[in-house]
Length: 234
Image (cartoon, rainbow, N blue to C red; front, side, top):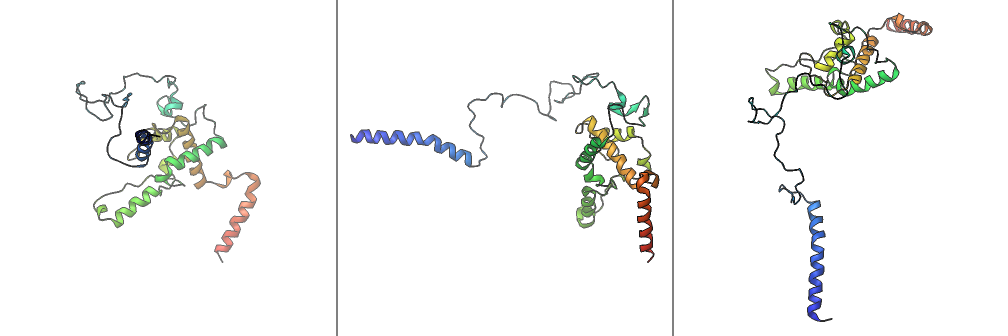
């Protein structure tokens, strides 16, 4: 093979290997330089982001309030009991007809409670969640904590909370209260009612009476209580 042809062949082979090598390097390395963007698609375009200014409107805000009376498709929300926890002008004293309080609902409520509520209110609802524990540790051990205050999450077993209707508890989850932020945007309506059911179960578990125990189990429970009393008395 003529020498010039050999040289040309080697150059072509080397050139053909360059793109895969460059691609491999780019895919495995990190850089602060923006990537090469030949096809823009709609990635780079003039637009306003949340919380940005927009001089086209008199108030200068890019974010616009919803038009009054706007209703999302498929969500007329005419049932105030189900969507807002109200019956007429009062807080609903019972669960709406769409909510069937059964084992499945309770399990769903337990799971949602542990995700959204437990960090502050604790697993049992006494207001001793991990957020509260960390906040109190920070106030005690950190110089930054001096002069500041920590408002503890509410104990769900307080008489004030226990006396609330299910509609009022549902509203608190939806719209928040005091320092508690609203969860209406994060938790669907059906899950909010499930959490209410679980809160009621927690309250009942910590304030149960003998009459709440099934009749066939009362005798054995009384036997256990008597044994515990005798053991404590020595």
